[in-house]
Amino acid sequence: MEQPRRPLAQQVEECMVSWFQETKREAKSGNWEQMMLLSLLYRDGYGVRANVEEALYWRERGIETARSHGITIPPDVLARMEKANEDTDHSSDDG
Image 1 (cartoon, rainbow, N blue to C red):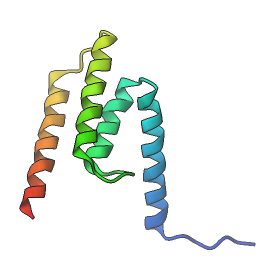
Image 2 (cartoon, rainbow, N blue to C red; image 1 turned 120 degrees about the vertical axis):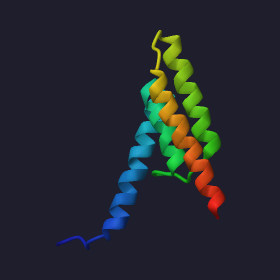
Image 3 (cartoon, rainbow, N blue to C red; image 1 turned 60 degrees about the horizontal axis):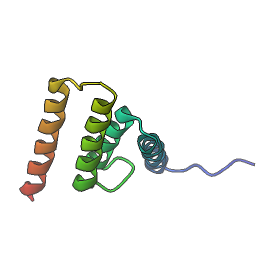
């Protein structure tokens, strides 16, 4: 018996939620790269409602965790993330 087809938008949403959950699980386990990715997912609202405070929290936690392991995130990467955060903040001002 064939299962009914689900709308593509529903399937995509389920994938985004799953990706978010997996990323958060890895971030909570201490993976700094996943912390940085989780920051972007929170910022942009992929798989979760957008949340600037959570985005900033995970970004800072990712930076601190990387530093504690002797890893320096290249300044240009941080600058691009900061610019993207500023663009996101300003786009919400448009109304």
